[in-house]
Length: 364
Image (cartoon, rainbow, N blue to C red; front, side, top):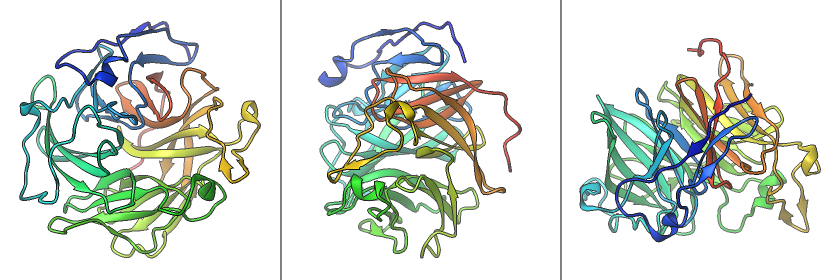
């Protein structure tokens, strides 16, 4: 795949947190596979706002915050600033939330969007900045530039660090925990259970663990349109585990990924996509290893893969792939907008863009 684009990131709007301001407008040339938008510090998750030209990206570092991206203009801005117009707290729905997040600390990982009505969306954000929580925002796409308002938060239980989040129409929210206290990354690389899925329903005081959902590295999570099942990535197993939310005593199905380590999983463009680094990468010595009880941090650039879950066939088809990119390692998410594939990373300081291959119709 080739491109001749030159990508420049422009920051607009309110003053940025000090850490974000240091990112500065940056020129980053494309390579032979990918085009880039720079200055997006660790955009671990990325979502396309359906029916618009806009995308949302997280920032997995202190002050990296939420980013709003104009895909047509290749322009990125920091979206949540903490300004009065960004805040409309619902203390009845979220009585245990201590107050709005500090944009200078906002450290986001997983994202989830759910339609709430015409041009109205609920955005859930896993936050590590100043507190471990799920932040709740409303998004209005009736205006040209989508409007964001913070509504409240759901604190995580003591000691539990959220990773990814999803939701259902009845208000239930599910969050994955990658490693519970006393476990490590090395444990799930070796195939040991380390995490779980935690559930909250409207009116409940706190999240509670769902028995039977422990996996080797509970990572990305997504709800099924049938409103009964959900998909969870077992990162240490390189697989998608399918659960029945009304009876989650172990997965009802497992779909193993071909030669890559899926991270986040999302519906986008009518397709269930997941993205991750190549598992067996010759340039990095092959398989991910554990040495003296410590897992390889995967700083060596690995090839990247985007897969599509074929639910009917119980397999993951390779949608797009590329060789190692020194400037874009750690691919963790993918979103479709128009004829482009937008890629997030838990390591890089940029977002990548690839042409979307010609695809057969999405499965029902």
